[in-house]
Length: 141
Image (cartoon, rainbow, N blue to C red; front, side):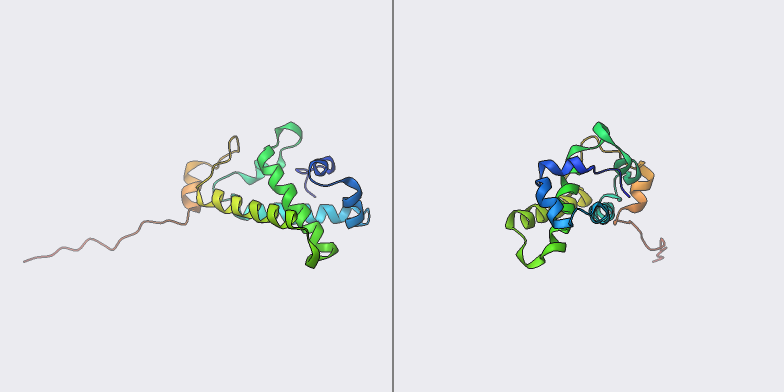
């Protein structure tokens, strides 16, 4: 279970009555969706950022931008449980925006201010760019 997202964090994105109706007041469903969201976000962020430190933060120590994206993705997953064919456009748009943001962060086009970076050497080994060459050849004419 993740401690990164608290139940009161959803109040800024969805009314509690709607959340309770979608999950039938079962908080374990919310926890499952939160864990899936964090696993999804780790896939994008782990190349550059220390995800263990990022997602273990609690209270005011949490990065608010990462938290907002995590809540949007989680709410989308919760809505998919209820009726995936009739998801409101705002939920789809916010989910798509969060995915695009994660892709841009993973590609290095966007940085997360205040997020803990991995050490330089570890970032270098996780990057998708490796420089290699053939052995040096000695040509005699």
